[in-house]
Length: 392
Image (cartoon, rainbow, N blue to C red; front, side):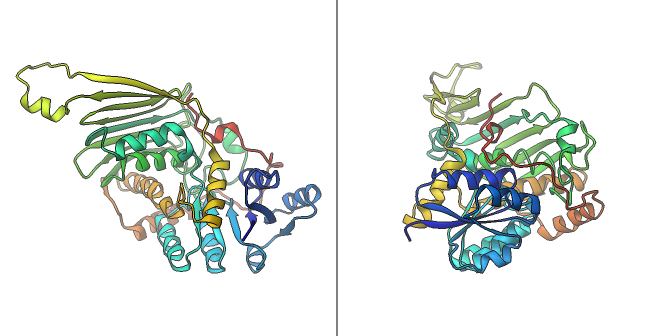
């Protein structure tokens, strides 16, 4: 295979940007063969601009085309897993937008399908290409930070107005979107949190519905997690604060990392905190350390980086930066947070009862105000700055 003949399912904001990226020749080894959308206006606009590209209104018909090797899925969250599974069954390679879906049960089924059919399966966790997060993961995973003691991520620079939420009928609804700030704005951060620090054993959460906006899902959330070794973590996110903060702090037995404002600060201790605590005869000792800073001088390759990595995986067997099967982890954190809130802020052990979550989510979806079918303007066909890591 010289070029991956690719189709994009869903040509709204994200899908149109992916399509434009491929059409511009930005991804070596990948060409655009087709697009699919149920919205006739979007299909018409795309056909006028790109008359040589096949256009479908039904993704199932599109998947029957043997001249399509891979699909990129950029439709509403709750449709991701179903479409991805059908595509895998048809032998297509699949790259799905985040989140992988809205429930862990869907992710479990999709991961099983990926293992069964063996195609390349990736997810658009584009912020994994950021050099500061890559370095932080390296330091934690290599043991240079020592055993994890605590983590705190304050990620509140998501300020949104009521006008933003009113701009689409699907926004901030249980039936249309499947959740609020944890499912829409924060999936990248939840993924990076577990990618760097590992998955916790339990989640306790406080998710405030409509605290700042007239919506039916949460716009303010706090997660408190426990790790296997006894360490704890806190994750705070909101769309109702201004100015917001993006600060990740990771403390280990051998030092501390702080990522903020495009800089990673590293305090590297020459003795472990545990050792000094147990052996020092002083009550308030100062532990010598080396201090260094890593500034983000290079931009993350972002969406283009994930697309190129996906193409390289299909063509040359390259290791995926973001395997699609990893999508279950951040989704498990947000699902557990919702389950905790719905069960009187109780501590939820991981993995949790996925069937119970689905039942409680279905109750909220049945009472949702979402009505499918409205269209809100033409997509730009370009990647937006707000989709990259935002430090301020």
